[in-house]
Image (tube, rainbow, N blue to C red; front, side):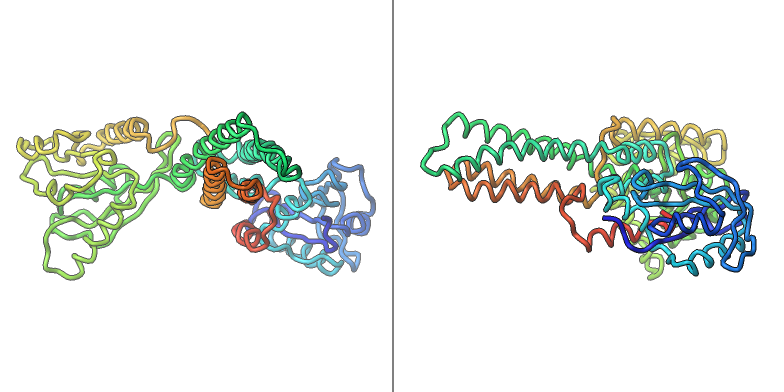
Length: 448
């Protein structure tokens, strides 16, 4: 679907730099090249020339590349202009392009056109945004695999399995006088059960997607003065949080990010947990429990030098998410406090000793790997949108299995199979939903 209008946008941030890139896509691209640079060069080869505006004035000496349809990112005739990275120069060129009949691109419109023109499926188009925003190695690899089309290939494979089942079922719709043989009934059930299991693997992987792309949420909790803020500062290697001997100093949470090996950690220092009559402090403590509920990893900071009652406060926590940080190990130890956490994973440190930072980080890293907070393999990850469609397809397959077992009419079975196919089609975009497309591409940057 080649668009009638031609779009343009900056493909690099609006800031001073060595080089800035302007992208153009649409039917006006060849005439723009000829009128602005004086010639249309060989496609996909870089050329150097003066960009002249409608008045004939030179706006910049730039490199430009012509991409002839369909061999371009969008599948349309396209142009990329590499200017000097002065935002004023780039804006002048964009304004001139608009005076020649272009319009400014909407968010994600270049990639949307690539999808609509068959250059990539919808899952690949979504991966473009994920790739741009990847902030760690695992997120980058997952995005690259999706952009390479691995999710689309797997979905297409599963769709083909369903189509084969549909062909068998619909043969008996066309010839109703024939009964479905028992061996075919067993095969349909077996194939649908295998199909459901395959979908379930992807559905299970969806729980890791936010952890990989957005980071692991690490809540730092404990009683007042246990050393929560000191631990945050130790991990950040900076004095980010205020440290005071006055109980209740931290009344709202503080959030910071660090990169640990191939993972992003979202560190959240919470208000000290204790009984309080202060309304503001209690609001902070309530917020602490909300953060704990949504955390992937909970660092419970304990002052090992004195008696602690927080074990009772946190008795309902999932131990598999908890790592005990026994702080103040340079002081005398309260053995009863230490013993009360003997069934948890523990690391002993002193936040006053900067060298102990690596002890905590190593323990966190081994804890993440041991507790499978992230997937242990680089399998395909799916988004919440993908997961919804996969669940719908799986539910339709399960309904189809029950219909076969009940010896229901083949028409009902075929209807469920087509419903499952439609759900899979929504993932790769073979089922067009304009509202879904608007939502997906609205999160892109303008020049992509």
